Amino acid sequence: ASALAYTRVIFLAIPLVIGGQDVFTGETSEMLDVLRARRGFGRLRVSPNASMPAVETWTPERDAAAVTLLFALVEARAFGLATRLFQHVTKPRASSRVLIARAVVLEKQGTDLREAANIATQARTAAKHDPSDIRALVLDQSGVIARRRGLHGLALRFYDRALDIATPSTCPEWLIIQIRSHRAVALEYLNRRAEALREHRRVAEYEKRTGDLRGYAKSLNNIGIVQMNQRQWKPAIAAFEQSCALKRDLGDARGIAQTLHNLGKLHFLREDYQAAEQTFLESLRIRLGRGRDEHGAAQSYVALAHVANAAGNLRDAMSYATRALEAHTEFGDQRGMTQARGLLKMLDHRVSQTRNRMLLFFPGT
Image (cartoon, rainbow, N blue to C red):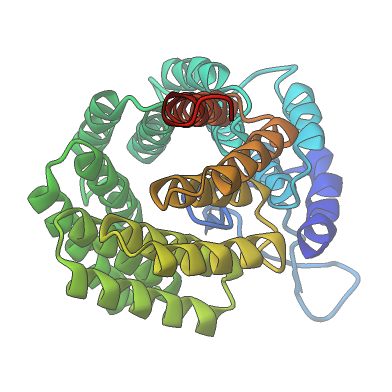
């Protein structure tokens, strides 16, 4: 509701924009956007009818307003309105910033990753003559979309190109750190875990130094993932617990649920299926409650199906996998639907095998 209330103000400002402002978007659990004010912000103007100078009314530049509104609508899960806004704003001309914002919206929505990649390509073309920070941002977000599609090598190439452009003399430090954070995740997927851990720790040090507690909590979560996949159980658990504690202080329910999900995966890898089930269920409870994360809930159902399958409880596994398919279908996540169908097919095959064994040893049952 607060996001929608804020968007109403910006929506009214779009036709009246003056001055200049850049919007850089960071991939966070709330899709927070970072505004960088530039020329024309807070200029004084002298009113001939007043003895005191007045501050000039300031409204955001058109593209900045559109990008901010797009992400606010996504936070409110108003994807239809976001699509209509994009169509309206791009009628006269589609800037690289608006294009890459639309691509990221599609990536977050998860309904059409191929279209997200196509729009990201258009954004890179449109950004050829943009300033270095905008070009680096477009490449960074192109990497996020490639990673979501499972193209981790391509994502890493986008991040490396972005870092080549994003030098300290041309880009703000926070943007360089954001690219490094995303790059570290791609390195983890490519099993280059020592490099990934170094990058995550570098990012975490920056976040501690600048007081970015939300970013630091996310980095602790990412460090825990790398350590978990290195089978360093105790350090991984400590990192996840630190991340959860920070997120509780920040009121980040969705972030807590994600870290609990990762902790559940750690228990699953250790074959502690009871602890895994309890942790996944706690994550699911938050996602269905104050976390308001339908897509995350679908992931929880998939995880619970795998736990039940590993524990030999095929009936529960089928039930969770069916719920996962229903949730992905309702959310419109084509990739998630494909994965859930594959899981159901595998479980159905296991049920058939179990039935055939029963018939072999106990004919007539």
